[in-house]
Image (cartoon, rainbow, N blue to C red; front, side):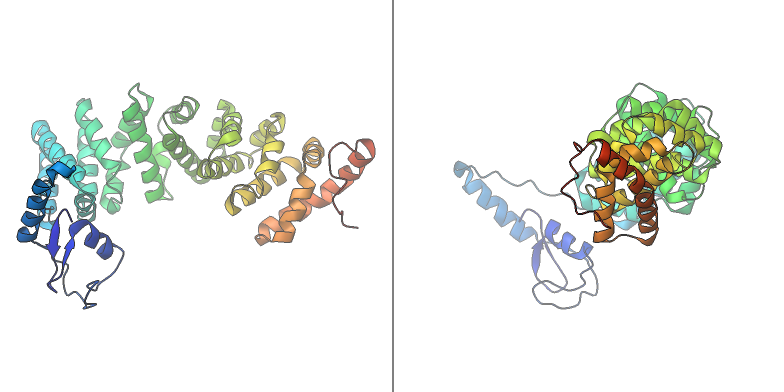
Length: 392
């Protein structure tokens, strides 16, 4: 034990361990199984002193003395901090706001329990309001620090989301995303991601920012870190889903199809799912499909990722193949798909089972590929499909 505390039942536990127990939804004492009427934890100073004395006595054996733990923050203290930072922000008191921010960050660093308590009691909404007020000023350091704290303060609640969706707040984040400071760029895209997820059906404020498509594209083209790239993909997909087609076309013309395919080459499971979702959105447009057809990686990568990443990725691969290979100039895509094993993959997918929509698209693709499969077999047997038991 490092920080022994006693529950109402009289049993003593290490604070970190009992916090984990309670945070998972348990409402009983682990030893007595009694229902806990409250989760108050009383520091067991006598036991802590005994542990520290034992550490000192065994210093020669390499045992280090545990430091005296700080008392965790309470809900009342968080509410007081929230009120003070909102008041300081409304009064444009930069120095006071800076002091409170430092205190918030220090408390969050002390323990996960403190951070959870801060989030649970509304620190995110207070920080969002503060950011909205100071985003209209030129205090970049203060804006940067508030934005950094916001990355771990979600969910914000309706009021906090509304503050971050303001034109001034969004433009401030976009400026940081365009800047040279990597930490600020990372924080900006993380906050944007949480914002679009929280607001769900409202991305109009982002779309109205001039050059936001180019800014997001560059954030992926010159990656900050893997997490930031994935956050960009989430933001871009939400923008495409909830905006007019012309917005998606702007991303296509920037070269996002080619960039997404590069991400898919050796991306992680999570990155592949997000990249495939963006590719599928772009393939809903005529220009997106045309750009995908012109890229030699499109069909081979989509076929390769089927059944190799996740069920979600497989469904997205089939959906994109269906858009790229069928209709218009998709004949070349069908031939290429057969050549790289697409027919075999889709047959296996149907045997293993999939969602009804995916099954329908896969069946349609198989029927269209069947003609080209026979031609390819007659022309060249080097594709390696002769051992497959083809259906009659």
